[in-house]
Length: 92
Image (cartoon, rainbow, N blue to C red; front, side):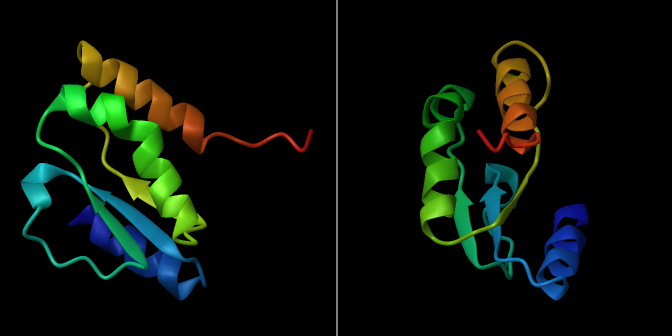
């Protein structure tokens, strides 16, 4: 699992890692600081995305690992939002 490797490397680098866990991996054991299990519905994922990110932020995560949904229709919008959230922050 690629995400598992990324999580382990980030933890080794001293990060508090949060994971947005897709439904297809719901039974996977993830060793992270915090895990949010995503809903099976893309509509529910899109609707709750910023809440899921805030939840991981409130739990002290300084790095979040997320799988991008299929980039079609609503999945494309969710993927764009995740990329935007992953972008550089301004200091203003």
